[in-house]
Image (cartoon, rainbow, N blue to C red):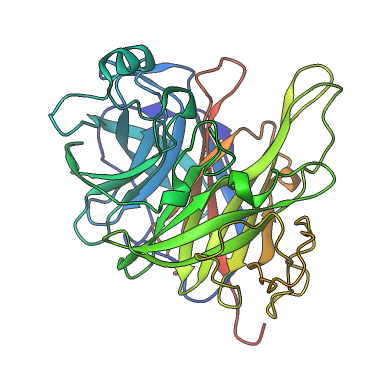
Length: 408
């Protein structure tokens, strides 16, 4: 089995998905575990159709078209904000190639591409920071999130584009998901709209914040975890529910004066009230190098409290979710008195990526279900954001989804 190959083609779609059924979607039942199939990498700053490939933060499978989308978080710095169309060739035992087939530029309402930071500030335009992208299961349009930038007064957003990148619309967001410069409220800069997923029936969307709101308490530390909000909205932006997800504590201590974090990097809905949640932690050692700690959890929100009307979580007591009495252990407990306790989401570890023994585990930011294998099991693809850095890699990791067996 070839796991560490680097075969990237740019010619077309022929020969893809060899031996695999062309139906994507979550597997029936819970995700019991993942079986690693293989890895592909893309060259650093690979040139493709006049653009530089890198910063891949979002991925999704387009079942109708039979290909994948890969969204870059380039803030129109190297090239205008964009996404790529790609094909993967794999079997149940090997991941053989990634084929880029096209690039589409995301466009603003007037048809122009998004500006870079300097041009955007000067012209008052919107500077994108795309962190997730999804194919609409109903019409094949592309929905994407942007984190915004509190430093230049730009709010996060969720927008819909045609497959050609042309703007179709924008999803209204609750006020609490805005940035409020100079105030201790709202989303944190560069740690907000990180996860996006359609519900399996396509009738609603899920949004996940990477880190707690300012009013929800401090982010994770090596001593304790934190609570990040996950929100369900209908296709018009109406909030259907909001839940507290318990982030792990940072799994290792950074070097003296060095950086470390942990947060949600992506989500995928698997059923009514259940999600796969990717937690990613980057810990900087004393030598200045970063080590990634990445875990995939299954979150069950069905026993969690709806916190849409709770203005702040920093001083709200936590109650155990009946589905998992240990779900709240990682989060810091508030000192509220007389306040009703909330139950956070339950979660179960599906995979600790650090146990795979990969030569490199990079900054995984996106994942999506793909075509089913001949045995009927779904596939799951993860992609890393190399930040256009020579010290990182653009890494695609492919897995078979092992469903829960009857009686388990």
